[in-house]
Length: 355
Image 1 (cartoon, rainbow, N blue to C red):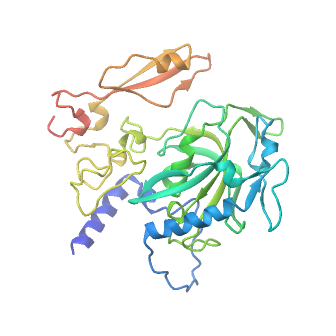
Image 2 (tube, rainbow, N blue to C red):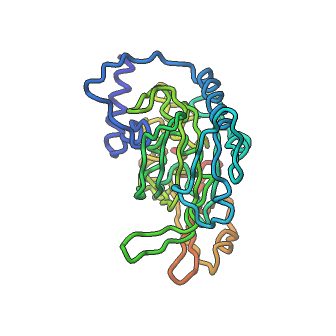
């Protein structure tokens, strides 16, 4: 009965703000299951044990495939279509102008997700010449191609789309914040837009950072997957419009939005007042009846250069937001949040129900 009550409360609270999709989305533009699919459910697997299996599979793939590295040496503006990954057949050697993927990716990246340590691999082909990097909570404008370890393409987007990283499989949130957006873009005569010096790479993900047990059309459950991608632009999100960008409402700093629906007083989740609305979706984060927007102060600073904005002196209760806007006159504008702490107890007013 208690579980049923909590579930109803969850649905009601999330429905009020129209963000239920952020909790329900299983992955990147996930395909719907066929109505006539009678495949029996696969028993759940331990995440830690599955990660060991997946990592072995990824290493085997990386040690048996190479890419056309020479094509990127003098290419200041590489594209997704330039990336060619080829299987190294038995008895063959890596041809001149190519590099074994295992050599190219270097050491694995490490992250903890769902209480499990994960290793994944990234082939960084171009950092991106833009000044912006997305956070895990932002929208990105991008193209991509997804395929399995047997090199079968399961999804391909050539025309750029905008999507929130919070709605994609976890791997995207762990990889894209390490890339910059495109340096610039050019409108062509045929009406298309060419992006210059964009972030380009390939991510090699274990199933735990992909779809895990949720089989998709053409992707079996517990499958490691690969994505080629181009990062073109990013847009900073403030999901609840409370004046605090959503990336700053990740209270435990794990790069995910989490709520403990069994324990509303969990200090490690992202819900300050325990109302089952995480702070990024709550216009009154501490539940004191005063809107968060009315408990902070927002100011801007304009300087001739981006670096001068970054060098702006800040008070101890101030934060310079990571998104700095370039104006048409070539100057730069940064946004500063003052997180007021009226009673001086070290807790900002917007998170302090006592104040």
